[in-house]
Length: 443
Image (cartoon, rainbow, N blue to C red; front, side, top):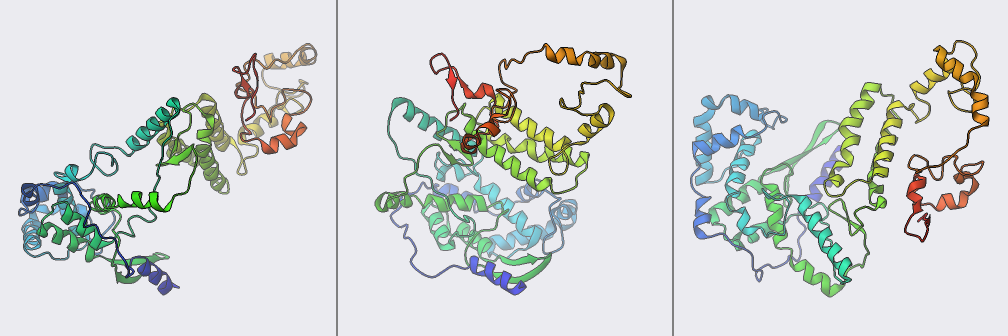
């Protein structure tokens, strides 16, 4: 089994022979010859030291058994040896392993930052300093909103690259760099970085296999995001091909970069995915016996952060915020299977339980403070002379609370309830003021 798993990953990272796209006719942005020479100068002690001290020293051990923190704390001792290795790499590229390769990649990435802005187009937002991936979603939503308001038609092409890092063709990447004006020395350095890597696969914590790859990039390498950006620069021809062969026609709203696209900003439905992800997490956690402290930690560290990404672009409606808050409360105080929590059991044991929950109609036995006891003595008269009014309806569930008639609507109209898209909506959310004098909107 171990050998089979290792062979599977080796095949995944092996290039298949066959036809490859020719990018000879592509016009890509280029760096100047002066800039190309500037990133090929000999490595200085200052830039090596700066890159080393800017790395996270607490990462896992490399294959050589040393952490980055070891090299940081031993700089004065190993400095001359490191400078010698970098000089040797500059003159004739050699293969570096573990923490030393990470340091080399960091130094090269720092040099690349000086020119990367010239060859990456303004419409590419990921992996570039000063740009945010959220910009892509914001701009796209603004464009679609403008189309919809003006009644214009347009085409949105959404491309999803499967296993983007694993399928990068090395020769394609080198040709793109050459078209961008990078020199032969720099291209040789990059070739040495991507072609000398070897992989092992952890099977039950034990490494299996030790094989070379012929395609793909290492995730976590400081240079890999830039490689991916370069490779995609040569993928513009895919758009032309898509127009020729025809593409699947979808409809709005959809999802782009993990965020809703083309949906009304205030629509409650755009948050269904967030709630669903929370429910899936809770379904897994409820199978475990977690302490109250453990539940609080999971709520703060995981549940509370699920909605943050979407909140950076869309404003969360109050009704959605209340539902999410209820999910968190139920998980914190509920039982292992979402049933009765500790608080309910304590209240029932102290005050008893009848039709009205823990607020019983009869004041008998040891019933807590005297004021509450006297109030409950008059509860029968109180309930006989009390009426029920919905009010705003922002705290009453349309389908599952008893507010209309003698039964909850989900039981009185089970077929309608089974077809309802949103089963946790409140009465307020179902009442549409825009329908004449007002009316029910269950869509």
